[in-house]
Length: 489
Image (cartoon, rainbow, N blue to C red; front, side, top):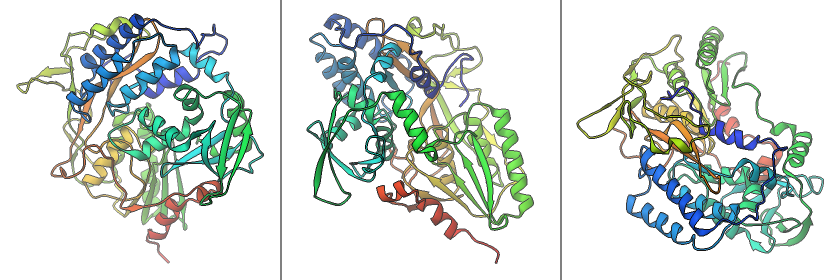
């Protein structure tokens, strides 16, 4: 997606900036209380900014329903709260918008303080609304594969429901929410549920009713990260944004995209080399692995599609924003860092429908196929980590019936998302950050209007994941794609 502002940052970049906040900075006191008047002022600023800036605030939740949720949240701000308590009000409220590019984050100093607390020393996987220990950094790996029944006497079902309600993701897709709370489980235990070490964990063998109670002291966030990296190096993500390998003497190409990234020229050069090599090898099938790909530059999603089609195609039908050229956003004074946020001249136009349409983007209008196109069967591995640009690309692949999807439902909504320029405002009192996308993307879907608008791309061949397979490193998605791929014997 093209940004309207040269200095803009994506949501993932902003969140990473929070995660990497300098640990040496002055520590905040998470117990510091803010008065109701301060809380309500921050809440109203957040709400008004969302209404003014968010390009499609009611896309997944009706205005009447969202207004009711926001009104109830504001009424609850009737007593002093600390940062975590205010976050527990804001997170599920923002999550009710059901937009994966809209979010709320802790101030960097508060986050640093929380990361200095002992976290649950497990990496977990939430599967079918059950919590399993995936990586055990407390008991030498002996607890891997066990199901967590409760933590600190709070049942697993309540833990999951609390976390899911605060997971800020697109539409009604549950795969992405379960993935989200799996990855940030330790963080959510502290911020959403108020847990503190030591952790009393009741566990059971997968599929067993026999339970045992274990107590673990916990590890600081950076210690947990170092130990996980040392004990489980196989979990480290690829350092390359993309990779191409061949199987069966080149008959099957496996193209993996970990992320589309922001470097268009680098991505363009890689794709050209990749598809030229696939052609020279005479590959009969392409396995495209997009699992966990959180997106990146929209132009690269459109470019990848152009190598899979032989005729011209449309990608975006429309791009909508709230402000016309030369207009500014009143919440610009709260942006961090401060920016004027004036819509550049020549970028938008107000049309008869009363909406402001962006008119400058490389993916608007008719797109041309690229050569050499791959015309053989394509098998795409998908999961709840396919976000933003990746979900847009997958929608268009589905519209053109160009691949067989293997795995689980993708994260982004089928007909498009709210993204483009994502700005961060800092609330003046509590310093919580609010992330707001300023553009809504509408995919070109032709006659495909029967799809549930709040759902992602669904797999043609669903693959059920089990904790035993995950712990053992079994990749059923890829195994199935390999089994289906035609080969020359």
